[in-house]
Image (cartoon, rainbow, N blue to C red; front, side, top):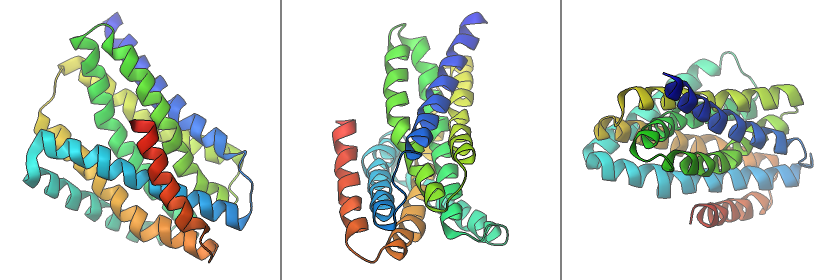
Length: 236
């Protein structure tokens, strides 16, 4: 039982500290339209990389084409449902983008937590190594969520707090993964494709259009390309 709580603690640290550090870094970003449009573009590019090179390929490998397609459409339907309800509550489109992106990050942090919890059962040294890798790649995800909040002039406390919340599913997933070991590949594939579908829709419908609205020049387009390339460098 001690080992179970130890693994769960690892999961919470990886998720919460990783995304929280991303939120903290956003506080030091210059608050000008051109810079923020560029950084929103970077956010879109980076998340697009995660979808195309990380989430969906893994989903296809684990569950096949049909499971992945179902997961993608379910993810898109969830975002449309949440978005339609958020529109009555949240007026600021950038805050809405951030909340939707936070949901998608939280969704994909859960299967990562499952993998983390299971890894501790496979090899004693694999868990800590995977924990460090996940923590590092959670930082830019937290930054990606925090930037729209930064643009909409939210308080530093709210920015950091919301990014911390998106890391919690990693700890929950680590707990479940450690409890029941290797979970069905089909289930993990569905989770990954679901997260990929939510991100793909948010990038297309929220992040890129908002970046262009903020600044009409090329800053956001250049940021999009740079974000995509940065994702390649970080993951390879």
